[in-house]
Length: 116
Length: 112
Image (cartoon, rainbow over all chains, first blue to last red; front, top):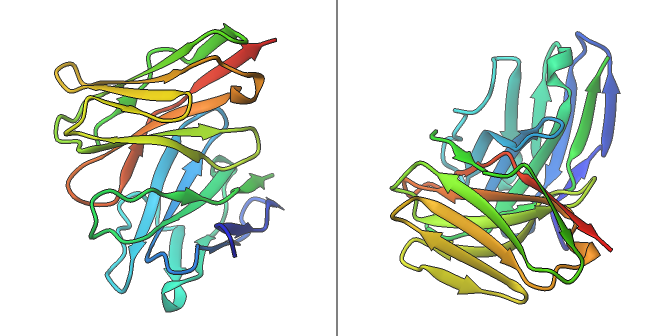
């Protein structure tokens, strides 16, 4: 596709349920990022994938959060046993190659997660 | 990571005026900075970037200024238009990793 896509665009779930959020990066982009954005706040880094390297998980807020990137392309962010404080917009971004120090990140439209 | 912050959370300007959005960063090792624009319901969109070996960079109607001495970054928008109304974020990168740290954003309101 022409840009980063994310699905679903909106997700409403009940407290305690698991959710999966999907990101399709731009074709050819080897780096993929997940961020969380709470209402009226900035972007909080969650996790970063680069090629076949081990992901940088330093931003994941708890062990209920995990992410995978299959085949170096599509990524899934999973939140287990969702809590109300998990409600936010989850943004995915991709960029070309981390070996170049200066790489613009292209963002998807985000998934708005609401935990009731 | 160290913080990236903004001086003004909300800025209101008249259409046609110039806008200046400021950002303070705390990590002197940061080597790359980006300004993003985020419209309601959309993901952030790249506006302009600057490397730490530069003081100024110009784009179409936008200019970014970097003052490394006081660790300050600014975005200037010339002849602000209603379509410029959005939240603007600065982001910094350091340690040669492609991980960016974002500020909390400034909301720009353009009055017609």
